[in-house]
Length: 161
Image (cartoon, rainbow, N blue to C red):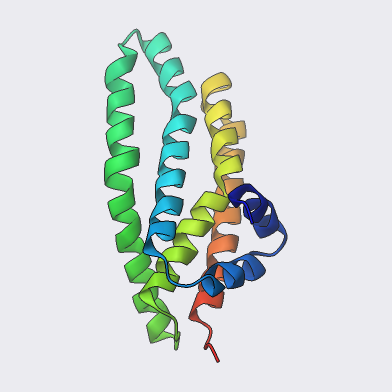
């Protein structure tokens, strides 16, 4: 299936999509592509708020974009690998029988599946700015991400026949 179709399917049933992704076999390039796609989309989502900040504060936009690019595309993927490793260790303590790859895939896919809300958050931050609406979108993103991550991680840690 296409990634966009899988994203829509994840909103209906994250476990089924994760099961299908795991059945495709261990492909580290696929997991990395999911992580990098999320990171690039999150960088793009920051652009409206950075443009707003540059305009309102009278600062140059290019350094802001450069810093956001460095953070989103270089530093964030490294942090995601660490978070995935920690989640695997925690799952192992609670009896998880998955793999390191499964933990990475669960985290990376859960993040990628929430990109529609990440883009919405970027638009809200750019056009409305900080306030209750942005807080509501942030809270909604967090709830949806945790929902996806818990279910996909549970699926990846389940014993396989």
